[in-house]
Image (cartoon, rainbow, N blue to C red):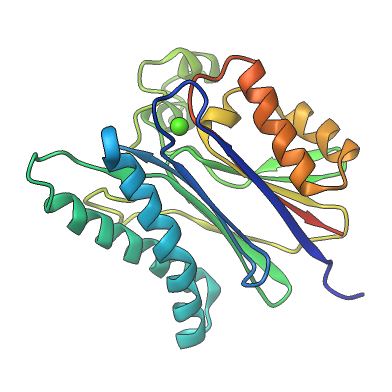
Length: 243
Ligand code: CA
């Protein structure tokens, strides 16, 4: 049985915000997919997420070609983007920091490799099964993983949006995990910013995947749904369909 056909769709909406700091890549030729959610206010967030989408797809290819190990290649690409964003941040004379989340998926041979920094997420949907492939690098989520907060307390916590890992942070040494998976026919991979994931439940992903064969139509619908449910953030997703 051959590798499934890979198709993709993507959509990003500014929503109620004055600018759109989300960026994405949905490149079926290079088979790299990415969502980045910039922060820093004014133009800084846009600059950081733009750098992420420029640097990571190219860097991951360079590192794959150089030494082949996909875990290392993905991590190195994230380090490259982190360094570039930190350098750019230091050159801002107003002393403002900028940063961005990044969730990336790239194919190597018969596997996809997924990694995330920050609170943008990757979900794998396979029939009635949904798995979040990334963890949220928020303070509240870390406290919940330690057992210091219940999941419900974490959802109410003032730290639920405070990130401790992202691109543009000083220390990425203890960095993101790279999660491999082997796509099967019928699988969907969804990458999304928190403007979407805060308003879309796993059940929505199961029913949506069953209803949409066209990844672009589904991406449009997911963004519309998040906005209809009251998301006041930028809303972005990339949908990858394996058929
Ligand atoms: Ca956001």
